[in-house]
Image (cartoon, rainbow, N blue to C red):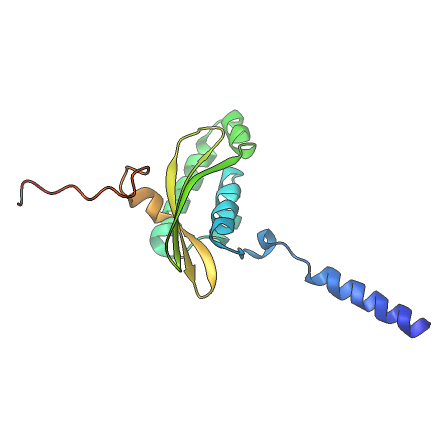
Length: 152
């Protein structure tokens, strides 16, 4: 009976060590999980965790740094409101098997914006620069680009 108890105990220890949520590892199960993890960490002011869910290029790191500095300048009441805000996803479009675009807002500001999530080396990551550089009309994905009438 003793070997069975030891084996059971070892099984419990091993299974307990293997149960880790995606939030602690910086890995997301899918595209929307990556967006949710990134945005939730940013709303809470945990930009170190947010960076784990972000495509690590210089533009993204720069935008995240600017966002963090802006967050730190907010008065404590606004930061608390952002920390307790919930996320809302309005529309999601899968561009291809490794790119998704989603429209989101948080319950505090309720200001819709667009985020791109990409899969790189089997991991879903947020491309934060898309938030700052995409076409400002986030609700009309089917809209064709305006024709430049000056250079026709």
